[in-house]
Amino acid sequence: MKAHRAILIKLPKDKCDVDYIKRLMALTNLAYRGFEVWVPDLPKAIQHQLYGFRNFKGSLVFGTKPKRWLASTWVPLKTLRFYPDGSVKGDKRAPVVLDFRSSIIRIRQVCRNEHGYVVELPMPKWVVDRLSEGGDVKYAMIGLKNNEPYLALTAEREVEPYVPSDYMLAVDVNSWSHGIAWGLVKGNRISSFKQKGLNVGKIVGLYKQAIKRERRLGALKRLGLGDTVNAKRAGRLVRRLRSRAYRLIRAEAVFLARKLAKKALRYRAMVVIDDVDWESLKELLTRRYGKKIGKLLLSGLKRFVKLLVTQLQWYGVPYEFKRLYSRKCPNCKHKLTQQKGRVMICTNCGFKAPRDMVSMYWVLTPSPP
Ligand SMILES: [Zn+2]
Image 1 (tube, rainbow, N blue to C red):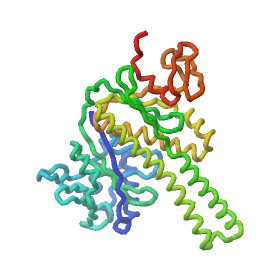
Image 2: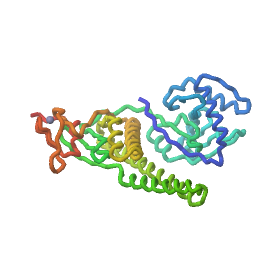
Image 3: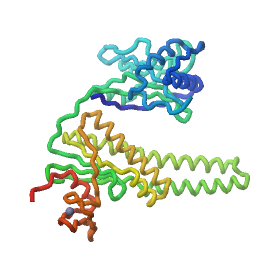
């Protein structure tokens, strides 16, 4: 099985011609659609690259197909790799050179339309780590995101999932605190359980501040003062508060996905991930926190699942999705009732468990009666 992981590297804007990259992206879009357009003022080598990719255009490496005409499409690029042991792999004329001997990435001819133009970047630790895990970066992409130039690297690794031990790691994505809960399960025993809520309080706080500043900005604009120093400062602050909330959620998702993948590896566990009903979770979060914050939290949880799956695949951890209910009896599927002291009880079969841990019981082997 081939597993993939990707990283985005911001390119120095002063060393990149954004309009040139835009043109390359437009040509890529045409190439995806089967058109071959040879532009006289662009390097032939680069154009050859583009059309050489036509047969791979459905492959995972190049992400999703452009949805509409002239939508921005990232430019696929081959790589040439110089490994630490002196061996070399890849296309000699590839526009992206990964030099592990001097820890430098060289991008040739795709940042500016100038003969022999090269941009050099330090080799990110991420790439070295993937290489040490047996991965290889065969392809790269260049493109614009919010009008900023980026290089995307995709590492590929051939991996077979391991045969799991007796341990199972259950991951509940929609736990009571609207966070993530996980439990290590062996047979009919939960050997450890932990819960980590997304930092909802902090995110709500940041958002409220942003809304307050936004109102003040609106008032200034109505007074015709939208161009003043004060208004500009308020606008900047709103943007900063918003992106801080996003970053907070993102960081949490990255941290937890990594932590749980490591935990699974340590126990050679089989991972069971809550097969979330995203629609109803969206409703629940919207009802509780409002549309904007609800959306933000939802995107954080979705991101977490995606990151977790990517890492499990990369390290060969076997996993499956399963609905892990927290209000339904894992023995007889009867609706559970909550009792004092956060205890859930089944009036049908007598099942009883702490409220937060009910979802973990869905992966237990039922003990014989
Ligand atoms: Zn029951």
